Image (cartoon, rainbow, N blue to C red):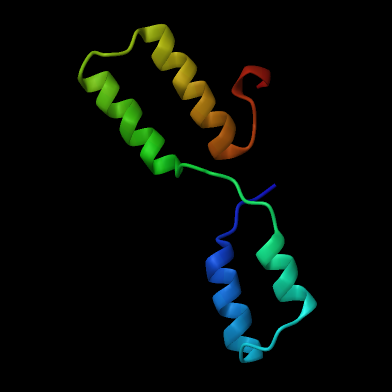
Length: 79
């Protein structure tokens, strides 16, 4: 699964179709969305926690595994 910015997609659809309604536009409008945080923000949080000595080494390891899993699409525990 990949995330898309539906607002950008709708704007591109409107640009290419000059705002004419259509089934594709309705599908885009009705598509489910998710709340997601960019990996760069998670990396910044990890670094800030580490620098503030506010995370245990085990917590840091778990956070790094989580980042690796979702950033690269694979589970580092299975490598």
